[in-house]
Image 1 (tube, rainbow, N blue to C red):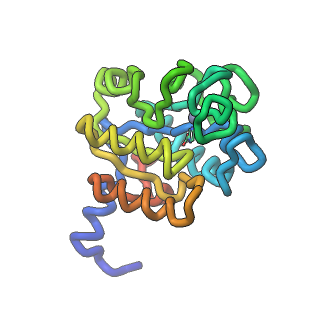
Image 2: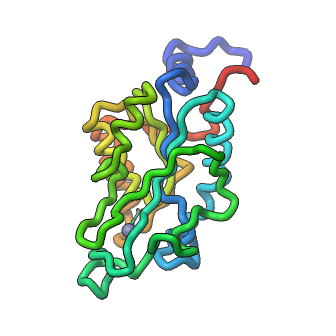
Length: 210
Ligand code: VGL
Ligand code: ZN
């Protein structure tokens, strides 16, 4: 480790240094998406420690943190009884819709509820929410995104964020996929990269010295 870093390595490190204009977006880390939940994502609980470290870092840097949540009415169109693809999940104000146990949700953190009406689903946290305006109002230009699930709400949120002009860093180790079809996780990562997102590992993020 005594070798001088090449210019490429140092620029990668510089890109992982948090700075004003950065925000953290934690997508749908809710009980129903954890193993054993109504729509359990394999290893979904594994995102919590990685995200908590990011949440601590963004908190220390006084950078915005947004928690999104799936927040459906009991007769939501995505549920099988209504002809949708999913079992009932994340019904507003139920235990299943609560944030994962152990997830650090700082007091005053911004919470964005999505897919809140029966007639429409929304995988992206930008769909019919004020997330875009809120982030712009806070001067955010670059988003670090992790959570559940890689192949649905994370993917859709990342694509929309790029479409809205944000730079996006995807926290690879802080997200997990449903994988209805084997390989959906890899396809989702490729789609995000093709759309212009950078895939990074959360433990390489750096703040200012404490
Ligand atoms: C999600 C399926 C259905 C997600 C939400 O948060 O990725 N997936 N509703
Ligand atoms: Zn849903």
